[in-house]
Amino acid sequence: MKIKVDYIARVEGEGSVKFNIEGGKLKELKLNIWEPPRFFEGFLVGRKFDEVPDIVSRICGICPVSHMTTSIRAIEKAVGFIPSLEIKNLRKIMSLSQIVASHLVHLYMLVLPDYHRLDMLFSRENPPSPPFTKGGKGGLLEEIKRLIRLKEAVNNVTAIFGGRPLHPVAMVVGGFTKIPSRDEIGKVIKGLESIKGDALDTVKMVSKLHYPDFRNNTEYVSIISKDDYAVNEGTIASSSGIEVEEDDYLSWFQEEEVPYSNAKRTVMKGRGSIMVGALSRLNIKFGMLHPEAKKAAEMIGFKILGKNPFLNNIAQAVEIVHGIWECIELLDAFSIGNYFFKVNVREGSGSALTEAPRGMLYHQYELNKKGIIERANIVTPTAHNFMSLEESLKKLVNENIDKPKNELSLLCEMLVRAYDPCFSCSVH
Image (tube, rainbow, N blue to C red; front, side):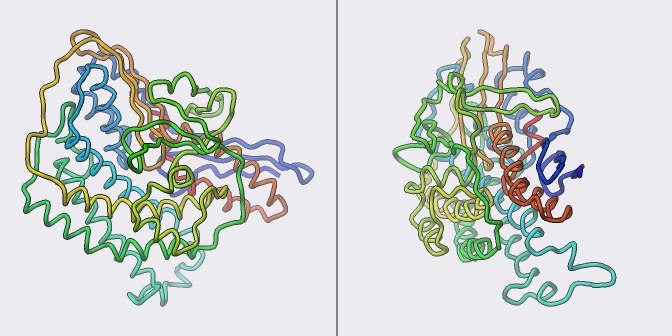
Protein backbone atom coordinates (compact mmCIF):
# COMPACT_ATOMS: atom_id res chain seq x y z
CA MET A 1 0.00 0.00 0.00
CA LYS A 2 1.43 3.34 -1.07
CA ILE A 3 0.36 6.48 0.77
CA LYS A 4 1.09 9.96 -0.54
CA VAL A 5 0.46 13.28 1.13
CA ASP A 6 1.46 15.29 -1.92
CA TYR A 7 0.97 18.65 -0.22
CA ILE A 8 1.22 19.03 3.55
CA ALA A 9 -1.30 21.69 4.47
CA ARG A 10 -0.96 24.29 7.21
CA VAL A 11 2.81 24.50 7.30
CA GLU A 12 5.07 27.28 6.08
CA GLY A 13 6.26 26.28 2.61
CA GLU A 14 5.79 23.24 0.41
CA GLY A 15 6.52 19.61 1.27
CA SER A 16 5.15 16.08 1.02
CA VAL A 17 5.32 12.73 2.79
CA LYS A 18 5.34 9.50 0.81
CA PHE A 19 5.61 6.00 2.22
CA ASN A 20 5.09 2.41 1.20
CA ILE A 21 3.70 -0.42 3.37
CA GLU A 22 4.10 -4.02 2.26
CA GLY A 23 3.07 -7.08 4.24
CA GLY A 24 2.17 -4.97 7.26
CA LYS A 25 5.64 -3.39 7.40
CA LEU A 26 6.97 0.02 6.44
CA LYS A 27 9.32 -0.39 3.49
CA GLU A 28 10.15 3.23 2.71
CA LEU A 29 9.30 6.76 3.85
CA LYS A 30 10.53 10.07 2.49
CA LEU A 31 9.91 13.62 3.62
CA ASN A 32 10.27 15.61 0.44
CA ILE A 33 10.71 19.36 0.81
CA TRP A 34 10.03 20.18 -2.82
CA GLU A 35 9.76 23.97 -2.61
CA PRO A 36 12.21 25.41 -5.19
CA PRO A 37 15.59 26.56 -3.79
CA ARG A 38 16.08 30.32 -3.60
CA PHE A 39 19.89 30.64 -3.43
CA PHE A 40 20.17 33.37 -0.78
CA GLU A 41 23.68 32.24 0.14
CA GLY A 42 24.73 32.73 -3.48
CA PHE A 43 23.28 36.14 -4.21
CA LEU A 44 24.49 37.59 -0.88
CA VAL A 45 28.01 37.29 -2.27
CA GLY A 46 29.07 40.68 -3.62
CA ARG A 47 26.63 42.67 -1.48
CA LYS A 48 27.66 45.22 1.15
CA PHE A 49 27.57 44.13 4.79
CA ASP A 50 24.82 46.61 5.69
CA GLU A 51 22.53 45.23 2.96
CA VAL A 52 22.57 41.72 4.38
CA PRO A 53 20.02 42.06 7.25
CA ASP A 54 17.31 43.44 4.96
CA ILE A 55 17.97 40.75 2.36
CA VAL A 56 18.01 37.75 4.71
CA SER A 57 14.82 38.92 6.45
CA ARG A 58 13.10 38.00 3.17
CA ILE A 59 14.02 34.36 3.67
CA CYS A 60 10.95 34.13 5.88
CA GLY A 61 7.79 36.18 6.36
CA ILE A 62 7.21 34.65 9.80
CA CYS A 63 10.66 34.96 11.40
CA PRO A 64 12.36 37.93 9.65
CA VAL A 65 13.60 39.30 12.99
CA SER A 66 15.52 36.08 13.68
CA HIS A 67 17.32 36.18 10.35
CA MET A 68 18.06 39.89 10.78
CA THR A 69 19.34 39.47 14.35
CA THR A 70 21.52 36.48 13.51
CA SER A 71 23.04 38.14 10.46
CA ILE A 72 23.68 41.38 12.37
CA ARG A 73 25.44 39.54 15.19
CA ALA A 74 27.60 37.55 12.75
CA ILE A 75 28.59 40.69 10.80
CA GLU A 76 29.33 42.69 13.95
CA LYS A 77 31.60 39.88 15.13
CA ALA A 78 33.36 39.92 11.75
CA VAL A 79 34.11 43.66 11.98
CA GLY A 80 34.85 43.66 15.72
CA PHE A 81 31.87 45.74 16.85
CA ILE A 82 30.59 45.00 20.37
CA PRO A 83 27.00 46.19 20.94
CA SER A 84 26.02 47.75 24.23
CA LEU A 85 23.84 45.97 26.76
CA GLU A 86 21.02 48.37 25.90
CA ILE A 87 21.18 47.39 22.22
CA LYS A 88 21.26 43.72 23.17
CA ASN A 89 18.17 44.17 25.31
CA LEU A 90 16.26 45.88 22.50
CA ARG A 91 17.19 43.06 20.15
CA LYS A 92 15.98 40.60 22.74
CA ILE A 93 12.65 42.39 22.94
CA MET A 94 12.37 42.18 19.15
CA SER A 95 13.21 38.48 19.13
CA LEU A 96 10.83 37.61 21.96
CA SER A 97 7.96 39.48 20.31
CA GLN A 98 8.55 37.59 17.08
CA ILE A 99 8.78 34.20 18.82
CA VAL A 100 5.46 34.87 20.55
CA ALA A 101 3.83 36.05 17.30
CA SER A 102 5.04 32.97 15.41
CA HIS A 103 3.88 30.57 18.14
CA LEU A 104 0.44 32.20 18.13
CA VAL A 105 -0.05 31.71 14.41
CA HIS A 106 1.20 28.14 14.60
CA LEU A 107 -1.00 27.09 17.53
CA TYR A 108 -4.23 28.85 16.61
CA MET A 109 -4.17 28.66 12.81
CA LEU A 110 -2.12 25.59 11.94
CA VAL A 111 -2.48 23.20 14.89
CA LEU A 112 -6.00 23.72 16.27
CA PRO A 113 -7.83 22.58 13.10
CA ASP A 114 -6.25 19.12 13.56
CA TYR A 115 -7.85 18.76 16.96
CA HIS A 116 -11.15 20.51 16.22
CA ARG A 117 -11.37 18.60 12.89
CA LEU A 118 -13.15 21.52 11.30
CA ASP A 119 -12.88 20.04 7.81
CA MET A 120 -15.02 17.11 8.97
CA LEU A 121 -17.43 19.17 11.10
CA PHE A 122 -18.24 21.87 8.59
CA SER A 123 -19.69 21.45 5.10
CA ARG A 124 -22.57 22.86 3.07
CA GLU A 125 -24.78 20.11 4.42
CA ASN A 126 -23.42 20.53 7.95
CA PRO A 127 -22.86 24.26 8.59
CA PRO A 128 -21.13 25.62 11.72
CA SER A 129 -23.18 25.53 14.91
CA PRO A 130 -22.56 26.33 18.58
CA PRO A 131 -20.09 26.34 20.25
CA PHE A 132 -18.19 27.22 17.08
CA THR A 133 -20.27 30.24 16.06
CA LYS A 134 -20.82 31.71 19.52
CA GLY A 135 -18.48 33.89 21.49
CA GLY A 136 -19.04 32.03 24.72
CA LYS A 137 -16.44 30.17 26.72
CA GLY A 138 -14.86 27.36 24.74
CA GLY A 139 -16.23 28.52 21.40
CA LEU A 140 -14.17 28.86 18.24
CA LEU A 141 -15.12 32.52 17.92
CA GLU A 142 -13.72 33.17 21.39
CA GLU A 143 -10.42 31.54 20.37
CA ILE A 144 -10.19 33.65 17.21
CA LYS A 145 -10.85 36.86 19.14
CA ARG A 146 -8.19 35.86 21.67
CA LEU A 147 -5.69 35.25 18.87
CA ILE A 148 -6.38 38.69 17.38
CA ARG A 149 -5.86 40.43 20.74
CA LEU A 150 -2.63 38.56 21.39
CA LYS A 151 -1.23 39.04 17.89
CA GLU A 152 -1.99 42.75 17.79
CA ALA A 153 -0.27 43.39 21.11
CA VAL A 154 2.95 41.54 20.24
CA ASN A 155 3.04 42.95 16.69
CA ASN A 156 3.00 46.42 18.24
CA VAL A 157 6.16 45.53 20.17
CA THR A 158 8.00 44.54 16.99
CA ALA A 159 6.74 47.60 15.13
CA ILE A 160 7.64 50.19 17.77
CA PHE A 161 11.36 49.36 17.57
CA GLY A 162 11.55 47.88 14.08
CA GLY A 163 9.53 50.51 12.27
CA ARG A 164 6.99 47.88 11.20
CA PRO A 165 6.04 44.39 12.43
CA LEU A 166 7.02 42.52 9.26
CA HIS A 167 10.51 42.87 7.77
CA PRO A 168 11.58 45.64 10.20
CA VAL A 169 13.74 48.45 8.88
CA ALA A 170 15.09 50.15 12.03
CA MET A 171 17.22 47.26 13.36
CA VAL A 172 20.62 47.45 11.63
CA VAL A 173 24.29 46.64 12.04
CA GLY A 174 25.39 48.98 14.84
CA GLY A 175 22.06 49.25 16.64
CA PHE A 176 18.71 50.93 15.93
CA THR A 177 18.00 53.91 13.69
CA LYS A 178 14.71 54.78 15.42
CA ILE A 179 13.86 54.84 19.12
CA PRO A 180 10.29 55.42 20.37
CA SER A 181 9.25 57.83 23.09
CA ARG A 182 8.40 56.80 26.65
CA ASP A 183 4.73 57.45 25.92
CA GLU A 184 4.79 55.08 22.96
CA ILE A 185 6.52 52.42 25.03
CA GLY A 186 3.98 52.93 27.80
CA LYS A 187 1.15 52.16 25.37
CA VAL A 188 2.89 48.98 24.25
CA ILE A 189 3.41 47.87 27.86
CA LYS A 190 -0.27 48.51 28.57
CA GLY A 191 -1.16 46.38 25.55
CA LEU A 192 0.98 43.50 26.79
CA GLU A 193 -0.47 43.78 30.29
CA SER A 194 -3.94 43.45 28.80
CA ILE A 195 -3.20 40.05 27.20
CA LYS A 196 -1.68 38.27 30.20
CA GLY A 197 -4.94 36.46 30.83
CA ASP A 198 -5.20 35.52 27.16
CA ALA A 199 -1.71 34.03 27.30
CA LEU A 200 -2.59 31.86 30.27
CA ASP A 201 -5.85 30.82 28.59
CA THR A 202 -3.79 29.78 25.56
CA VAL A 203 -1.67 27.49 27.74
CA LYS A 204 -4.82 25.91 29.21
CA MET A 205 -6.40 25.51 25.78
CA VAL A 206 -3.37 23.86 24.18
CA SER A 207 -2.79 21.59 27.18
CA LYS A 208 -6.33 20.17 26.91
CA LEU A 209 -5.87 18.91 23.34
CA HIS A 210 -5.64 15.14 23.01
CA TYR A 211 -2.15 14.41 21.69
CA PRO A 212 -1.13 11.04 20.24
CA ASP A 213 0.83 8.85 22.65
CA PHE A 214 4.24 8.84 20.98
CA ARG A 215 7.93 9.13 21.81
CA ASN A 216 10.90 9.84 19.57
CA ASN A 217 14.57 8.99 20.13
CA THR A 218 16.29 12.21 19.13
CA GLU A 219 18.76 14.46 20.96
CA TYR A 220 17.47 17.88 22.00
CA VAL A 221 19.66 20.92 21.30
CA SER A 222 19.39 24.62 22.13
CA ILE A 223 21.58 27.53 23.16
CA ILE A 224 21.94 28.27 26.87
CA SER A 225 23.20 31.03 29.12
CA LYS A 226 23.93 31.08 32.84
CA ASP A 227 22.14 34.41 33.17
CA ASP A 228 18.83 34.03 31.32
CA TYR A 229 16.62 32.05 28.96
CA ALA A 230 19.00 32.43 26.02
CA VAL A 231 17.50 33.73 22.79
CA ASN A 232 20.07 35.78 20.88
CA GLU A 233 23.39 34.39 22.12
CA GLY A 234 24.80 31.62 24.24
CA THR A 235 26.51 28.25 24.34
CA ILE A 236 25.18 25.24 22.42
CA ALA A 237 23.88 22.54 24.77
CA SER A 238 22.28 19.14 24.23
CA SER A 239 20.06 16.93 26.35
CA SER A 240 22.94 14.45 26.63
CA GLY A 241 25.14 17.01 28.38
CA ILE A 242 27.26 18.29 25.48
CA GLU A 243 28.26 21.97 25.61
CA VAL A 244 29.82 23.66 22.58
CA GLU A 245 30.91 27.25 22.03
CA GLU A 246 29.10 29.19 19.33
CA ASP A 247 32.25 29.60 17.24
CA ASP A 248 32.83 25.82 17.26
CA TYR A 249 29.49 25.12 15.56
CA LEU A 250 31.01 23.83 12.30
CA SER A 251 33.25 21.41 14.19
CA TRP A 252 30.20 19.68 15.66
CA PHE A 253 27.47 20.04 13.03
CA GLN A 254 27.36 19.21 9.35
CA GLU A 255 24.86 19.64 6.54
CA GLU A 256 23.98 16.70 4.30
CA GLU A 257 22.20 16.63 0.97
CA VAL A 258 19.46 14.11 0.25
CA PRO A 259 18.53 13.28 -3.37
CA TYR A 260 14.75 13.55 -2.88
CA SER A 261 14.60 16.98 -1.20
CA ASN A 262 15.64 20.54 -1.99
CA ALA A 263 16.51 21.14 1.67
CA LYS A 264 19.69 19.98 3.33
CA ARG A 265 19.54 18.25 6.70
CA THR A 266 21.91 18.97 9.55
CA VAL A 267 23.20 16.46 12.08
CA MET A 268 25.66 16.40 14.95
CA LYS A 269 28.80 14.73 13.68
CA GLY A 270 28.97 11.12 14.80
CA ARG A 271 25.73 11.42 16.80
CA GLY A 272 22.83 11.54 14.36
CA SER A 273 19.55 13.45 14.42
CA ILE A 274 18.68 16.37 16.67
CA MET A 275 15.55 18.30 17.53
CA VAL A 276 15.49 22.06 18.06
CA GLY A 277 12.67 24.42 18.94
CA ALA A 278 10.40 25.19 21.89
CA LEU A 279 10.29 21.65 23.31
CA SER A 280 14.08 21.39 23.12
CA ARG A 281 14.47 24.74 24.84
CA LEU A 282 12.15 23.80 27.70
CA ASN A 283 13.76 20.37 28.06
CA ILE A 284 17.22 21.92 28.38
CA LYS A 285 16.73 25.25 30.16
CA PHE A 286 13.37 25.07 31.91
CA GLY A 287 14.95 26.52 35.04
CA MET A 288 15.71 29.79 33.24
CA LEU A 289 12.09 30.45 32.24
CA HIS A 290 10.32 33.49 33.64
CA PRO A 291 8.66 32.52 36.98
CA GLU A 292 5.21 33.12 35.50
CA ALA A 293 5.97 30.74 32.62
CA LYS A 294 7.12 28.12 35.13
CA LYS A 295 3.86 28.55 37.03
CA ALA A 296 1.92 28.12 33.79
CA ALA A 297 3.84 24.93 32.98
CA GLU A 298 3.27 23.57 36.48
CA MET A 299 -0.41 24.51 36.30
CA ILE A 300 -0.92 22.09 33.40
CA GLY A 301 1.47 19.43 34.70
CA PHE A 302 4.15 19.89 32.03
CA LYS A 303 7.18 17.66 32.68
CA ILE A 304 10.64 18.40 31.28
CA LEU A 305 12.57 15.88 29.19
CA GLY A 306 9.36 14.64 27.64
CA LYS A 307 10.11 12.76 24.43
CA ASN A 308 6.78 13.29 22.68
CA PRO A 309 7.30 15.79 19.81
CA PHE A 310 3.57 16.57 19.79
CA LEU A 311 4.22 18.34 23.11
CA ASN A 312 6.15 20.98 21.18
CA ASN A 313 2.75 22.65 20.93
CA ILE A 314 2.48 22.91 24.72
CA ALA A 315 6.08 24.12 24.95
CA GLN A 316 5.26 26.92 22.52
CA ALA A 317 2.27 27.95 24.62
CA VAL A 318 4.50 28.16 27.71
CA GLU A 319 7.01 30.28 25.77
CA ILE A 320 4.20 32.69 24.87
CA VAL A 321 3.80 33.42 28.58
CA HIS A 322 7.56 33.73 29.01
CA GLY A 323 7.92 36.12 26.08
CA ILE A 324 5.10 38.44 27.13
CA TRP A 325 6.22 38.73 30.76
CA GLU A 326 9.90 39.22 29.89
CA CYS A 327 9.09 41.83 27.24
CA ILE A 328 7.14 43.80 29.83
CA GLU A 329 10.07 43.76 32.24
CA LEU A 330 12.61 44.73 29.58
CA LEU A 331 10.35 47.54 28.35
CA ASP A 332 9.83 48.81 31.90
CA ALA A 333 13.62 49.09 32.27
CA PHE A 334 14.10 50.85 28.91
CA SER A 335 15.73 54.27 28.98
CA ILE A 336 16.04 56.80 26.16
CA GLY A 337 19.61 57.10 24.86
CA ASN A 338 21.94 56.50 21.94
CA TYR A 339 21.16 53.17 20.32
CA PHE A 340 23.09 53.53 17.07
CA PHE A 341 26.86 53.53 16.54
CA LYS A 342 28.89 53.74 13.34
CA VAL A 343 30.63 50.50 12.47
CA ASN A 344 34.18 50.60 11.12
CA VAL A 345 34.53 48.12 8.26
CA ARG A 346 37.39 45.65 8.17
CA GLU A 347 38.19 42.29 6.64
CA GLY A 348 37.04 39.38 8.75
CA SER A 349 34.68 36.48 9.31
CA GLY A 350 31.99 35.99 11.90
CA SER A 351 29.28 33.55 12.86
CA ALA A 352 26.30 33.66 15.19
CA LEU A 353 23.61 31.42 16.63
CA THR A 354 20.20 32.51 17.86
CA GLU A 355 16.94 30.85 18.82
CA ALA A 356 14.38 31.46 16.08
CA PRO A 357 10.78 30.48 16.88
CA ARG A 358 11.40 27.04 15.39
CA GLY A 359 14.83 26.53 16.94
CA MET A 360 18.52 27.12 16.48
CA LEU A 361 19.50 29.38 13.55
CA TYR A 362 23.09 29.79 12.29
CA HIS A 363 24.57 32.51 10.06
CA GLN A 364 28.21 32.82 8.96
CA TYR A 365 29.83 35.49 6.75
CA GLU A 366 33.23 36.33 5.34
CA LEU A 367 33.88 40.00 4.46
CA ASN A 368 36.70 41.62 2.50
CA LYS A 369 38.34 44.88 3.56
CA LYS A 370 35.64 46.90 1.79
CA GLY A 371 32.89 45.18 3.73
CA ILE A 372 31.71 43.13 0.77
CA ILE A 373 30.38 39.62 1.42
CA GLU A 374 32.64 36.95 -0.06
CA ARG A 375 30.94 33.91 1.48
CA ALA A 376 27.64 33.26 3.27
CA ASN A 377 26.42 30.17 5.11
CA ILE A 378 22.96 29.83 6.67
CA VAL A 379 21.61 26.79 8.55
CA THR A 380 17.95 26.99 9.54
CA PRO A 381 15.95 25.29 12.33
CA THR A 382 14.09 23.12 9.81
CA ALA A 383 17.41 21.85 8.45
CA HIS A 384 18.36 20.94 12.02
CA ASN A 385 15.01 19.16 12.48
CA PHE A 386 14.79 17.44 9.09
CA MET A 387 16.34 14.09 10.00
CA SER A 388 14.61 13.91 13.38
CA LEU A 389 11.23 14.62 11.78
CA GLU A 390 11.76 11.97 9.11
CA GLU A 391 12.85 9.39 11.71
CA SER A 392 9.85 10.28 13.89
CA LEU A 393 7.52 9.82 10.92
CA LYS A 394 8.91 6.34 10.30
CA LYS A 395 8.46 5.39 13.95
CA LEU A 396 4.93 6.84 14.04
CA VAL A 397 3.89 4.86 10.95
CA ASN A 398 5.37 1.64 12.33
CA GLU A 399 3.51 2.06 15.61
CA ASN A 400 0.19 2.77 13.86
CA ILE A 401 0.58 0.56 10.81
CA ASP A 402 -2.79 -1.14 11.25
CA LYS A 403 -4.78 2.10 11.16
CA PRO A 404 -6.83 3.01 8.08
CA LYS A 405 -5.05 4.92 5.34
CA ASN A 406 -6.78 8.24 6.05
CA GLU A 407 -6.02 8.09 9.79
CA LEU A 408 -2.37 7.24 9.13
CA SER A 409 -2.03 10.13 6.70
CA LEU A 410 -3.59 12.53 9.20
CA LEU A 411 -1.26 11.37 11.99
CA CYS A 412 1.73 12.04 9.74
CA GLU A 413 0.49 15.53 8.89
CA MET A 414 -0.16 16.28 12.56
CA LEU A 415 3.37 15.22 13.47
CA VAL A 416 4.87 17.42 10.77
CA ARG A 417 2.83 20.37 12.01
CA ALA A 418 3.85 19.68 15.62
CA TYR A 419 7.49 20.21 14.60
CA ASP A 420 6.36 23.56 13.12
CA PRO A 421 8.69 23.40 10.11
CA CYS A 422 9.45 26.32 7.80
CA PHE A 423 10.13 24.64 4.47
CA SER A 424 10.69 28.04 2.81
CA CYS A 425 13.55 28.80 5.22
CA SER A 426 15.06 25.38 4.65
CA VAL A 427 15.50 25.97 0.90
CA HIS A 428 17.03 29.43 1.34
